[in-house]
Image (cartoon, rainbow, N blue to C red; front, side, top):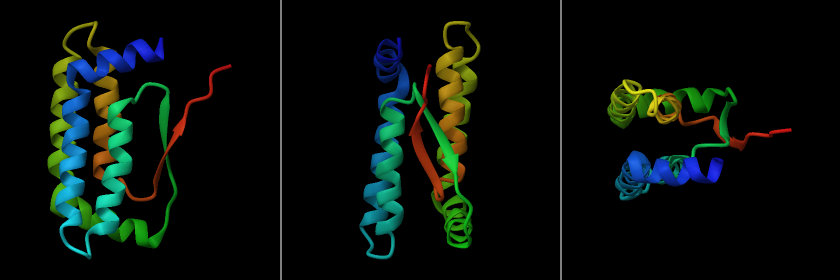
Length: 124
């Protein structure tokens, strides 16, 4: 079921979301100082390609908090707002609710990507 949902996800907006993460990562990697931020963007693009069956776990740390504040001010709020609005549009229909929930998960991650790990969801 996850495979089918991930294929539908790519068709109905996941590819655009992943491309936004990759573009943001490339823009950050242009500067030497921004390379760690760009690498984090590339990691989060993998979640945007196939979000079903994955969860986000957060680890707190002082460096993560500082980087998250810089991230929010520079490029995080635009990505979070875009993903949130797409999620709201998808939740209008019953069929789009699972996809909308995934966009909300990515919107939360767009606000605070540092200190976040993407892990596989274990199903028994």
